[in-house]
Image 1 (cartoon, helix red, strand yellow):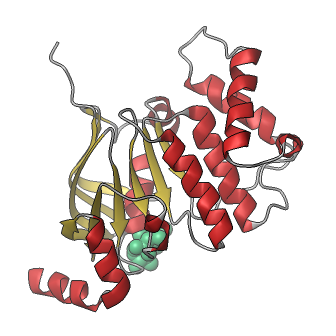
Image 2: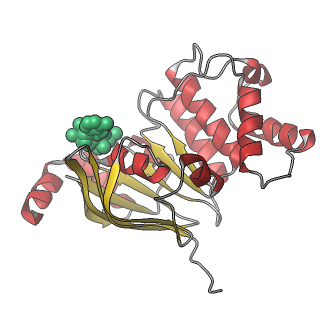
Length: 256
Ligand code: ADP
Ligand code: MG
């Protein structure tokens, strides 16, 4: 068997809600070891891209491919995608009443194990202690119910906790910075940066450049009207910060 590339590849991806096309040919390659930022004006398909990658049934893929380590995932259920190590942090995390964070984390870790392999208590507890330390979070938090009564900042921190526990191969973070103050932003960034290394790839989706001061991306791509209209290094995010999005919208219009 030939060696498969360790990368997330999005190839000519078209997706729609009902008969309304939203993604119109997105091409991206994110090797493991790199974090790429996806930026763009609101309403242009950033969240749709994230949701299609994790398999949200609301969206129909009409053309193209999503390949994780060379394997097409579009026919897979969301939990199969998660088992491949694809992790999504939502813009609006859900509440799950009656499930404590500790239980949820344990179940989520177990779900990623191959059949017949158990998550040991020492593995679980060791990881949990480290993760909580990174996030500067008190241990008592894990006895609370998932997201119930959490502030925006606590929900985001909890997602990063999940990420640290699950050690995904690919993370998709959709506007994880929205509604966070600088202190919470720094904690989120610290968690993500602690996972960075040759095994982690991912997309950091954000409208604002602010988060990228703390999580410096390897590349930046701008999505307008369902397509990547420009790619570059971190300096591209700086440019958007100072010049806004008007010039990219013009680029997109010229491309139509
Ligand atoms: P972004 O994340 O860049 O702000 P989205 O991907 O959320 O953009 O949305 C892109 C476009 O698709 C918007 O016009 C939005 O209204 C539309 N859209 C996204 N999801 C849905 C949906 N579930 N139902 C109807 N329209 C949707
Ligand atoms: Mg969005």
